[in-house]
Length: 150
Length: 155
Image (cartoon, rainbow over all chains, first blue to last red; front, side, top):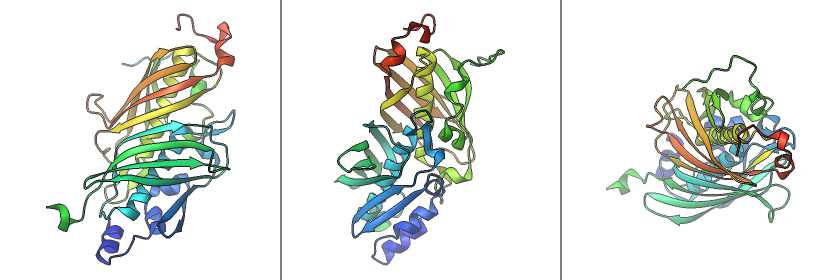
């Protein structure tokens, strides 16, 4: 992505807000970002179209999974110096509580930063950080800078 | 495999009224007990990588989750709610821009409390997957305790 290449070339972290705005799907589900230094909290703004179970009502599991995946990727953008968006290899999502029809927050940790693959964990919560609604662990392929490639 | 239902589909309620499935325009295109095929049409607002125009992995997550959930509903015929316990997805290749994505899901085991499913997302060939998944669902005991809530022959 041009945005990432420019940030890398200029030796600074990419502008995550710009990055989110450039990804149509993030806009579609309503992802926002709160960055304080290297600590990033992502916010999934509630809207009716995120509902998967209208009886409870509860957020769609797929949306919660997607939100965690986005959170993991955003954390990787900060920590891994990569020119392209990281690609998911595999993800596992544990659903811990049903997602209520309110805003959801998430944070991710890069557990292992490999040369080609990173292991990331992420957790989403709503009212209380200590009561997560879902957790993700996954592997993502990253593309190192061209100069480091060979 | 096309199981066209000539009479009103008794399983239509599984997708109707699910706002997120409607937002993604997910449709059930084939359905039998424990097996389902769903489709999500390609759309510009679902793109996850503006450079390559590849659809976001989250769309596949939602599609597979929904398809697996429907496979559970069609196998158990539970009127009560089900909830995803966990979902694991392996991404095999990037989706091709402009093409619809299909998902086949099957519920291969139902116990008293849990249903086990697997699924695959693809464009045209199920043997050339975009992603595969395995998911477990929690079944609500309230519904399972009522025998009239079950399909004849369901486990």
